[in-house]
Image (cartoon, rainbow, N blue to C red; front, side, top):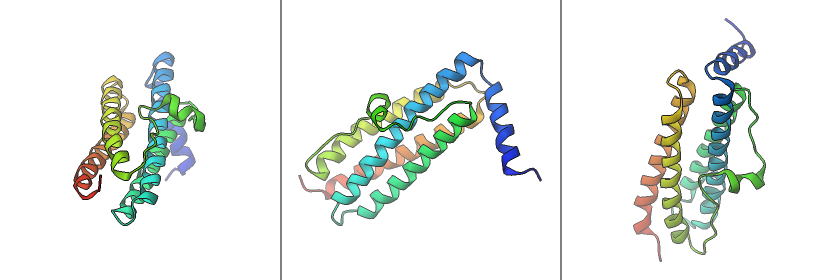
Length: 165
């Protein structure tokens, strides 16, 4: 059985040959946007965790960790495509589909987050549509992240009636 290093190297070579250089560079740019979006989400869910005071606080921490896993998947895919993941914090707010928004109450933050999640989901749908059908890895990864985001949006909707104004 080949080593993990050999498999990762082959995966990178195959991934790079699916795209012409200009298309590959554009995909890497878009994946860095997705990476920034996920990192903003990590920060938001961490904040919710500490503001929740008993209202599903642990669920927010779990979501934050799951979203961090999505960011790691995206970063790994960027590397497989021959790019460099952009983890510069100052770039997150410039590159992301979403923005980190201040708010005084958990209810206000979650209301803002519901809008931000819809924007992010639209961005993921657009990205999925733009990816060549030959790039099964990127499409599958983004579809899985989109499905998770849809689940988070449903959870937030169910939580709203339980929060004070």
